[in-house]
Length: 200
Ligand code: IMP
Image (cartoon, rainbow, N blue to C red; front, side, top):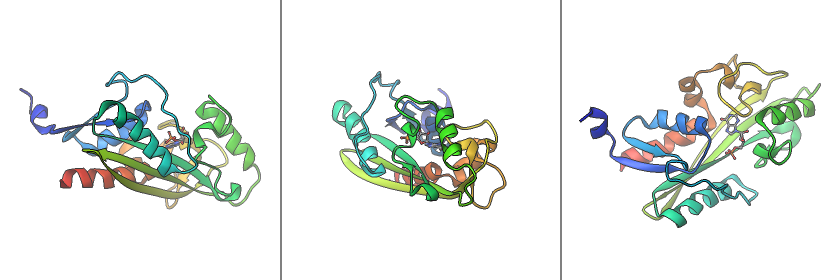
């Protein structure tokens, strides 16, 4: 038997279909905890996100899966909050340019809204909702930065090519996964989740 077999001592469903998110968090968990995607548990529906806050949406997604499968699971919800736009797109970040828009559509709209604007301060915020043995737990992470005037890099996903974290001279899309994970909103929230899980 492989040593990996012995090192995995828990499986946890991550209620997402986003392979980038799955890879980012699996990377942090190492091989002590194996993440299962929605596809891995043969769940192919869209999970609704009906609320106005990241916490409620993360909670809704985790509960949606837990109620149906009774499996330990977690979900995240992330928003990009731009100061000049009074916190928009925030909880609507996925659908900023309209229903079923692409990452590229959202970037184009953001750059247009900020065309010629000097104040480009923004932050990413993530809330993770974990349901473990029926009990709910929450973990938050955030990163401050600014919106660039044009796209830089092609790694990552979403708004990564136009978001530069404070104190760095490159965008998230110019970083490798480890570098992004150390300082990103989801990396910070996920590290709290990992510490909590490994502490038990
Ligand atoms: P979600 O609802 O948590 O999937 O996040 C909403 C939207 O925020 C996603 O569709 C992405 O466009 C964006 N987003 C979430 N996380 C990231 C990230 O780490 N980098 C860039 N964009 C992100």
